[in-house]
Length: 192
Image 1 (cartoon, rainbow, N blue to C red):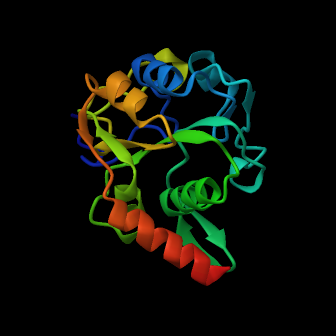
Image 2: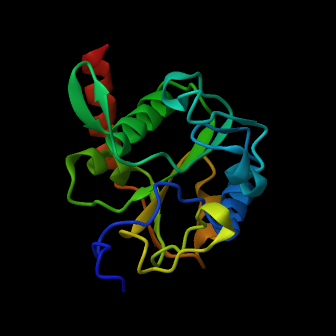
């Protein structure tokens, strides 16, 4: 390993999901209508009917249908405060799903199970794959040493049997803890 590269960082901010995960999502949902955090290169694999690019800022755009999302990591300023993109995208997924804004979604984020933003994801089916070798720019494939951490794919949708069937060979599946879903619904009702 190059001594100038810290052990737990990535060589690129761009990480494109390998095809086997996209295919599992497509089979579970019956297609992908929207990838709200994409680019033309990533959509060669995702094949979403509609994408939002970094220039579009998909976090601020309407969401709909059957979604795949591997959101940007890092941070952004929101109302003068530095916020984690993982938290913002996860929170939007959960709130929009609960409100019926989209039909179903797969959300790929880091498996930061000890972080507060991650807790609401326990209310949904989760797949914890072995460390993913993401595709990176210029067509190179990263190895697990350049992937800064483990990932999780959360499924927000009604096709739970299809999720289990299509994801069982790709990682460890963890069923929903519905008490988290009940708490999430109470929090959303209190915010309304």
